[in-house]
Length: 198
Figure 1 (cartoon, helix red, strand yellow):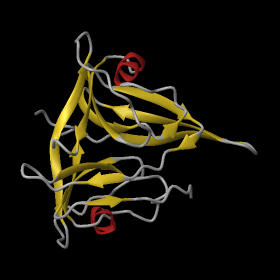
Figure 2 (tube, rainbow, N blue to C red; figure 1 turned 90 degrees about the horizontal axis):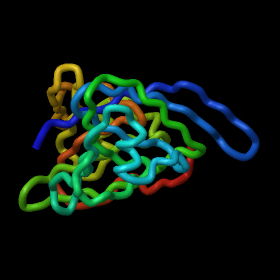
Figure 3 (tube, one colour; figure 1 turned 180 degrees about the vertical axis):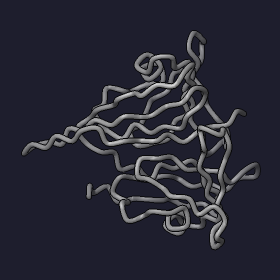
Figure 4 (cartoon, rainbow, N blue to C red; figure 1 turned 120 degrees about the vertical axis):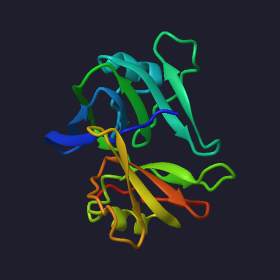
């Protein structure tokens, strides 16, 4: 298993009208592996093959199968099974070079996450939803997620995990809506069922 990274997301432009919200974000992606989430419905990114085609220099997309506790991957020029891209969920992408990639859509995605504890690992990948703007730190995010005892982010510059044990002062890093985090849980559960935009 190779290491995964967390993506940085910047607001580029916001356009409002009476019927819909159209927004554009820039994903600041680094060479090698990044964790990303496509934050919109209606972004025209529907499958792993589609995502590889749209991001220049992308040669792999994968996601964490929470039930199997392992990655499912789709590689460029391979016979891997293509899979759907669900708005708001985490995906790992491998890139040949740094790139800023713009993604647009009309509506934010408000996902919920099934949290699993298994015989192998208790790891789960989550995206901090955009309506959770009150959550600013790893400790706050971990406390919002049922039965979370550890949370990690990925530093793409240093290619290293940064972990925060819940209830400690160790590495209480800043969290950002739209970014992806890895958590460990002590019991099965579900996180974030509120599908109402802020």
